[in-house]
Image 1 (cartoon, helix red, strand yellow):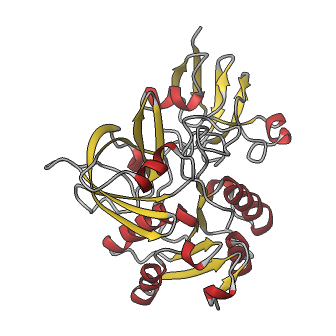
Image 2 (spheres, rainbow, N blue to C red):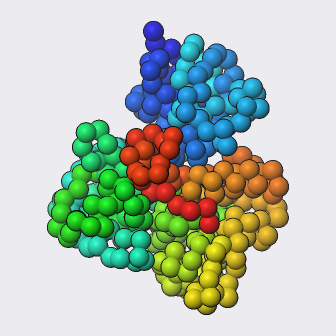
Length: 357
């Protein structure tokens, strides 16, 4: 049986199979719903079921509580239709309507930015390029249907080149190979772009960009895109880590703030030690945001990092700081199931986990 899903505001309709998620059915038919992790942890695809029944699947209770479910809310990356549906959700901006492609890419540079962080610079075939929005991510294809998702850390202006920021997860199928065996000139296969974590066109709203660990990668892309376009929009960048080494491109981010009056940068460490010689902000990075922004109404928040950080930011920014739900955008980094220590995550989840910094 095939079910019809209708988006109430636009009256746009698409069909879904019983065994596919609402998001998967929408994307398959060219309907661009907002999404991030595709694993039920970031909340980017959150919407409301107005009519009909769904099965919530793997949606995390930290993101979609029992009260939310009773109120008709659903995460469309996990929810499967069990009848025809009428739903309420945002449709992704037209700027996200880019073709998804599968391409080879050659590793041209491997840079150890921190003991457990590698900057991976990739070169596409001559004359080829990947169209994407700053903040989106790609899948690295590993074979046997396995993939690993990594945010693109460069702006689209870097023609034919892509950069990834990869943290080493001990036991990780991909990251163990990257840190122990891969070398320059090796070939990877990638597919993308994916995700709706990109800067919306709202020049009068300050953008509060919050990163944990290598969640800095898409934030870097967004900021560099804004700089390349000569944007004067206020960008407030918060980057959290446990130790000083986790802020592996600290000087770059500090340079943005020195050189551009519209950019403010706040680094935060949650577990600094004496060796770090740290005199900056301490604590949780999203708490630093709330200290500076007790009222977030009139702003947009873009949060990228661990599921715990994303969930805490969503909860507190909306409930305590007055941020409208439609102005919260997130990309959540999670374990892959075949990574040692990973429990309860899909095998297709991203091997790009971060600490709650």
